[in-house]
Length: 225
Image 1 (cartoon, rainbow, N blue to C red):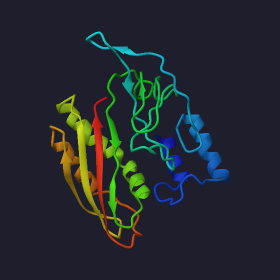
Image 2 (image 1 turned 180 degrees about the horizontal axis):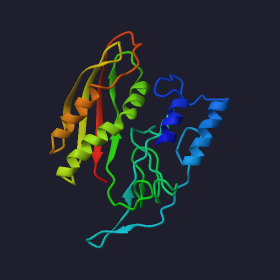
Image 3 (image 1 turned 180 degrees about the vertical axis):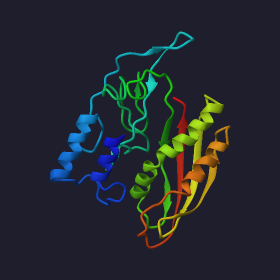
Image 4 (image 1 turned 90 degrees about the vertical axis):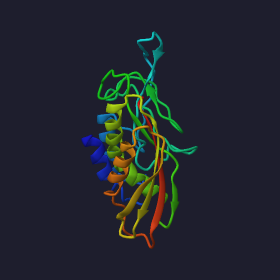
């Protein structure tokens, strides 16, 4: 966690308007941290190998979903929004990984753990009206995805099989403050999760240099793993 935060600092995340263009000592520092702590970045990648699958109580074999955020400055979602899976990297357990429109699958969870259910929060394709750049919005939301996951985990305590889609409408003022955040779509049976995510979103702050107000429709896909 410390290394990922340090890499964000070196990359001037989330306010760098031209990500992926680090050079010299800054880039060398990012690569060194990424290799030492096994972190996926714009300059590092890891090969994942699926080594085992866990047998479930009903006798079936099942691989586990391992959510890993896409690296800052790299668009992993050419065909749609999503997260990237990562395995065989030591810190995140062992398993197969994938990129693109879904999420990776593996046989480990957490820091070397062997859990069987890892909640995933995927950012679906957002709709933006206004001059605030869509990529900037996505990076800021990604920085707060832990708050979204915390809301979801509260719902999972009440219903371990809870899953669905929550979509927010955000109004972002020219100052970067979120003046309103409301739930416009919620397929979860536990409605408190959407309420919690909307409340968290009202505290988010975006770059305050936009010439006009932006309105954003932002969907999150939540799955228990």
